[in-house]
Amino acid sequence: NQLAIVQAPFCGGQGKSGVEKGPKYMLSQGLEENLKEIGWDITLESPLNEKHIQEMMERDAITDQFKNTKRPKLVGETTQTLYQSITTLAKERKFVLTLGGDHSIAIGTVSGVQDAYPDMGLLWIDAHADINTLESTDSGNLHGCPVSFLMGLNKDSECPPSLKWVPGNLKPNKIVYIGLRDVDTAEKKILKDLGIKAFSMYHIDRFGINKVIEMALECLHPNGGRGPIMCSYDVDAVDPLYVPATGTPVRGGLTLREGLFLVERLAETGDLVALDIVECNPALAVNDIHVSDTISAGCAIARCALGETLL
Ligand code: DIR
Ligand code: MN
Ligand code: MN
Ligand code: MN
Image (cartoon, rainbow, N blue to C red):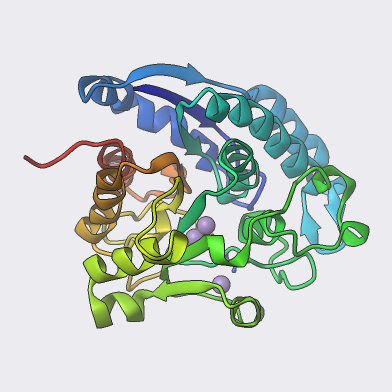
């Protein structure tokens, strides 16, 4: 039972600093020891050089822009580094747990895992769809765009050079969303046009979380089939009552139990091969309780996904 914990202390996909502190905070709550206790052999990986990123952030704040898109060079180079490292780890058949960082890192993590498991299904747990294209993004923040790159929706001729490395071969029927409640108008059109399966908070209220995860799993590997699953988990899927310290909180989200149940169920399938936990930003907390609630939730998501059970 080999587990690689990849630290991805990166904030260049959005505008609020502090999200790069996620990995350190989660590890300082004892995450590595806890995962060891449930039986994993762990290696801690740091493919990114934090100081280097900091320097690039400062240098590129003004110059690194492509049309409306912010810091494409920084995001492109960082995610490519993650991609290379994660491809190797996933091909060694290690479970890859990546601690973000903002959600733009998924451009690298998902591409890497997909190289090792071409038939994998991707579960995207988030309040947001993160499928804006370079054309459709209003904010220009690349953490709102990773899925469009993973699916190859940005034409090569219109793509900043730094992001052309992305294979972009994720098929519309190999991704399912859970938890959506803040989807831009342009994103709604993309989801509809491509027929991408998405379970919003409405569906969770309508069917309950248990039925929703079963339907999602069935979409990724139909007819009761099985196959590798990756989960990219934005902690803002969980209601800000439980996860207040995150960059773009949206009320009306998953309860903490619903958020943990999803990954408990994934662990139970035995098919989960990789997990991202992103968008914990301790710097946005207004008090210490907000910090510990948010980081505890992030750590609990990791432990449940990696097999910790209540009994
Ligand atoms: C918005 C917000 N759709 C954007 N996205 C966020 O900036 O493209 N994603 N917050 O996590
Ligand atoms: Mn989000
Ligand atoms: Mn929005
Ligand atoms: Mn996200």
